[in-house]
Image 1 (spheres, rainbow, N blue to C red):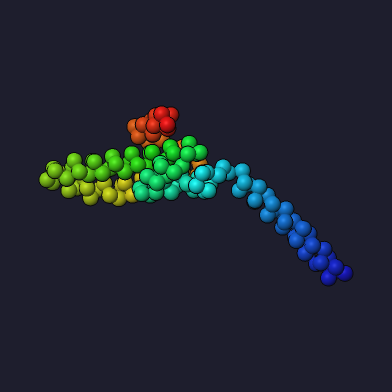
Image 2: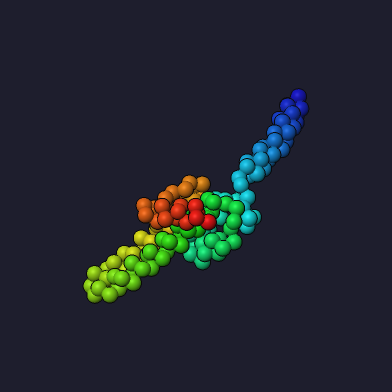
Amino acid sequence: MAEQEQGNNIRKEVESTPNQVVTTKEQNNEQKQTSVGLTENVGAMLCYIFVIGLVFLFIEKKSQFIRFHAFQAVFTAVAIFLINIVFSFIPVVGYFVSLLLSPLSFALMIFMMYQAYQGKEFKLPFIGDLSESQIQKA
């Protein structure tokens, strides 16, 4: 009798497992595919790696979400680079600013990657508006 109950429990677990797998596949299909073949959140997250952000600017045509994050990533990297160059001409202050700028910019990129992976269109104060205007022009 106990063996029969265990057999019924096993059958119930096996019967419920395929339904869960179908649900997971349906959820994955709900996420939009891009022209690159990635889901939008993964593509947007990868944009914050500087070279990949540049590549996505040229090859991604379908997803405005990825293009926004690509523009924002590239504009942020260029701004950080320019700030670093400007402060490098100031003797003492520039040294301390460059020491702080590297870890802060790394933390900002990690934060932006996390936001993009979550599917959020998090806008940086000036650069986010500039990125949106570039998407609307294209």
